[in-house]
Amino acid sequence: MKQVKIFRELFDKKALRVFSRLDSPIKIQDFLDGLPYSTEDTYRCPRSVLRDRQADCFDGALFAAAALRHIGHPPLILNMLPNNRDDDHVVALYKRAGCWGAVGKSNYFGLRFREPIYRTVRELVMSYFELYFNVRGEKTLRSYTGPLNLQSFDKLNWMVSDEPLEAIADRLDEIRRVPLITRRMAARLSLADKRSYQAGMLGVNLAGVFKPRRKST
Image (cartoon, rainbow, N blue to C red; front, side, top):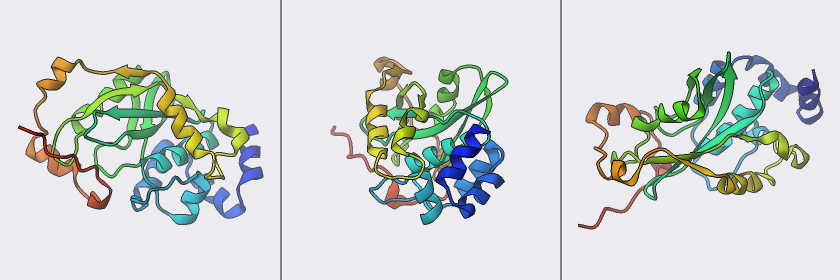
């Protein structure tokens, strides 16, 4: 009831009707999947996502965290961190029966929803590894941050104001990074196979992908 009161204080009736329909993680994911991927260099709070009907992975994670909060989950996000040849990827986390799942907005097909079947956050993040590749097919995921509870930013009105979002991004940069693989492992990684690459690139907006420079020989 406390969460419902918070939403009633912050959002108008039209927005509340949207949140009321998003009563499960998969419905939240379906909503995000229906939005165009934003290639603009700007952050959008959940209210701005509803207004503009577009989002990138950061905006989508914040919206998903808010929507998950509306149905009783804490508003948690996590940042997945690549090498210097790709973009970060932020998702919202939720937990059911002691296991972790995720909701996310991505330009890439394979970096979105995860069912709550992962016993640890590391297990969840590793489920993204094979499909976390750049436009050249290089597997780039290297580490991740611990979960960040956005409730600590409530005083800044992160759900309805774009201004505090830079502070959230800065906090993600400050959180301790948990490594996934060693340098030796990274040096021996293969490229994504052709079919996985084609599947992962399905529907990608090329204007929004990280374009790494060619490696020098």
